[in-house]
Image 1 (cartoon, rainbow, N blue to C red):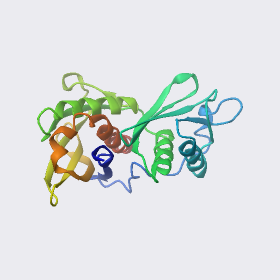
Image 2: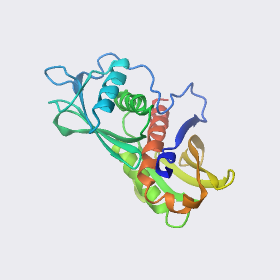
Image 3: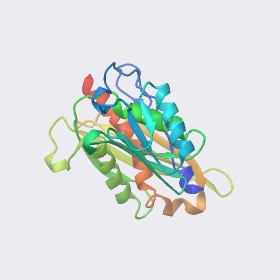
Image 4: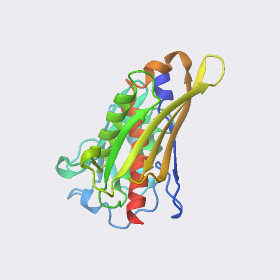
Length: 250
């Protein structure tokens, strides 16, 4: 399925020399007590809600491996709600009282539970205060694909707690997120698509890169970015947020 194929593999590169950077789906050690505000009074942890009991149980188990308390079904505290569509699972994580903590997308399959738990742990990891970012229009996308992908990345970054501003109102210390799309033949009927998100300082210095790539059916390439812009941006936004947070702590 092409939609599943576009749950792109992501890698992050921090160009400035400031130590190892956690991969976007493999968060670093969690600080003790960081999850306390998420727990309801009865300490059942995060309630996992999705119309697949086996997947829900697997996510709870994967969260337990990361020392994140969780249970299957509705609860009075934090809720991780998922919806399946076209081979993808769209998750929304909300804290007690309905406060939105994160939203992200993973591909269905054997690794879905483990990746979901990693994304939840990453969302709950300590981060620096929000920093203003400007999402520059995506370059190199097929006709009609650049604008939806640009808007989707802006929404995804806002959903992760960053301040997304227009270039005319951004402060001097704002960071710029520049996306670009490239593709090349990868065999009979196949194409390799790569989406690159660069984090750039106001003076033009390139501070870090998030790369997403996969091999997909060539016939579907031109029409793919519009319907899947949200899934692509959700996958890339975690890496961009990690870069921005790491740079802000320097």
